[in-house]
Structure formats: structure tokens, C-alpha cells
Image (tube, rainbow, N blue to C red):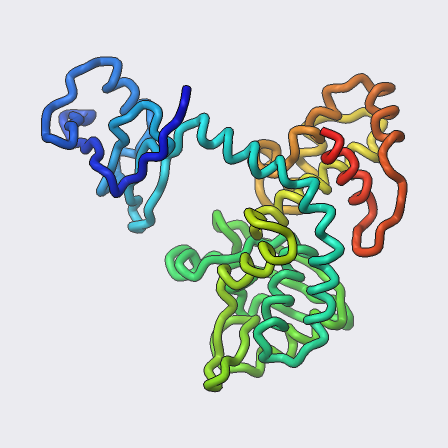
Length: 325
């Protein structure tokens, strides 16, 4: 099916409560009685409690439905083929992204030596948490509405220091308590001294007028795009980390299962194995578990063994695997 780009600022289908279900109406107000179309609309799975529901009048629209949940957050339902296309695009660039990691990590290391309160220093600290700790980037509205945090929205109370160990403990997306232990004297210096700045965030910077600013996700994405290429985002880093965790299992396990790889990725990312399997592990890595043990061993032994500055154990082999796909 060829999809068309159709957003909810264009005319859409509305619904009205009727008995235990809903009646549906075209943008011109006409009632939809066709059983096939009603089945499609019901199959979108928009919860009954959602308000301001918009439904796409096209079966091949890339966006199929939007609505607002009980907390007034806008939720989206995309066409299955659009989701698959986006996932394919995300994984397609992962090998190239891996090759840019030394450049990104060098930028982070250089900026972490900068003065506390500097914009680049603050962005580097956030990127260090994303890269080393696999944190989500964070969203101020999620923090306000749900009490959940990410790298840009952490508070000083979420960090403690034990010698040279940085200990993070905070509530993440979905209400899950996340505990992370990291090392790095340069990062520790920033996290300790940033707490002396005004403002509620753990990591912040001071503008030319002396105002303390939080790091915005857009600032982080801009650096990622500049250093690693268009389309790279904070989620790309999480996808890399999840894929790397799964690949590490593949390197070490004499007998490999998808379950073991999904559990390793979930542990690193602090989400469920199902989400890790579906969203954060490259299909080429999943494919390793589907090979007979001797064939998989031969496949892995053929990968590059070279050590590249700026890459961690196993990452150069992972890049080789992904770029050969």
C-alpha cells in the first residue's frame, strides 16, 4: 500500500458516543454506515476515554488517529506500514552512526573540561549521561505531568557521589525507578558544581544576560546532527546502546536466544524486554540468534577485531556487522 502524508490539521472523521460504542461521522457531517470502514475505525484502538479524537478519512494516511488522554496529553496512532518504515530508517543509519561515535565522544570529553555554566559544557554533560548511562533525554512536560525525569530534567536530589562513583536514582518514564552508577571525574565535576547554579535542574548553563537556562532537547539534537549526521537523535544513542548490549550477549553466548539478548538490552535501557526487542535491537543482531551455532560463530569470527580509539569493547565488531548488512 502506498501511504500518503496526512496530518490532523486536515479534515478528519469524528466520533460520538452511542450506547456501548461510537458512531462515526465524515468531515462533512455525514454518518458512516459502511461496516468495513467502521471496523477499520474501531480497529485503531483509540481508548473510549480519549477526548478531541481525530480519525483519518484515508485508509492509507500515515497518521491514522490522534486524541487526548486523561492528562490532556496528545496521543498518536500511526499506520503500521509507516511505523515499519520509520523503524527501518532508524536501523538503516545505525552502522554509520557507530562510526561517528569517536567524534562524538571526543567532543564530549573536550567540552567536559570547560567551565561550569558554559552552554557547551552543559550539553556535553547531558550527552555523557545519554552515552554512558543510556538515559532518556527528558521532557519538561513529562516531568510536570508525570513526575518522570531524563538527562535534561534531572534534579540535584537524583544524584549522589561516593568517592569517584556517580550514583543516579530517579523516576523514569512509566514510573520506573532507575538506579545507575557511572564513573568519570570530568563529568562528576560538572554534576557537583552545577548544583551551585540557580534553577531546579541538575545540569544547566548561564546565558550572556546572567540567566540560568536548562538544557533543551533541541540543543542536544543539534549537536548530534552536526557531529553524527542528519536524523541522528538521542533515541539513536539509546538504540545503539540497546543493540550493543544485545550484541555483547551474542559474542559471549555459546548458545544464543533472542530472549537473552532482549533481557540484556532491557537491563541497560531500563525498559521491558518486549520493548527492547521491538524498538532497540537492530534486526541484524536478532538474526544472529536464528543462525545455527557453528554458522553464527563463523559469522562473528569474520568480523573486524581492530581496536579503534573512542569505541568500547565490541563496538567495532558491531559496526562491521551492521555495515555488512
